Image 1: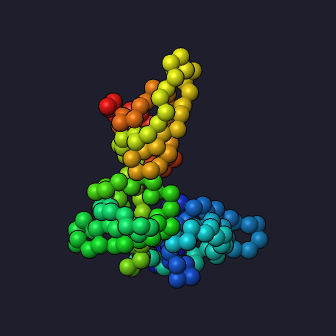
Image 2: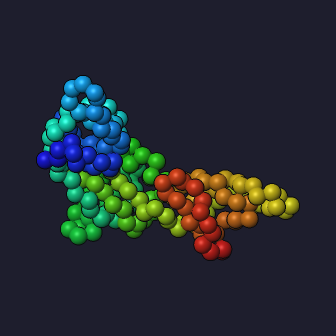
Length: 188
C-alpha cells in the first residue's frame, strides 16, 4: 500500500481497481481544515486522464505490474506478434492497442511491455532506432544550403521529415518518442 506521502510524478498506483500513473500532484495545506493532495493520473490501459483529490494520509494499492522484454516477431494483418525473451511465450496484440508506435516496429526488435496480470498495458520502444529510408524524393541541387527538409518513408512504413541531402537506402537514427530524425548513421 502507498500513502499519500509516497506520491511523486511517475508513481504507479492501483485506484478503483485500475492501474494509474501519477502525472502531476500538488500538496495543499489550507489555512482551515486538513491537508489534501490534488492529483492528475493517467489510466495505463485506456490513457484517460483523471483528476482526483486525496485526503492527507489516505492509502492506495500497489498494482501488480511486471515489465518484460519482448521481441517483435511479425505482423499478420492488423495483429502483431511478440515473444517473451525469457519464457518464449508469445503474445498477439491488435494494432490499435499499440498506437502510433507500430510505424517504428521492425522484425526482431526488442521492446519493453508493461503487464498488469496477463493484460498488456503499454509498449515502450527503445528511445532511438536505426532504420533505412525506403523511399524519398531526390534533393534538388542548390536547395541544400537552405537547410530544408523533405518527407521520407522508412522501411517500416512510417513517414518522417529528413534533410535534403539524404537518399533512399541511407540508414537514419530516429527518436521514437517524437518521431523525428536525429542523424544519418550510414550512407548507401
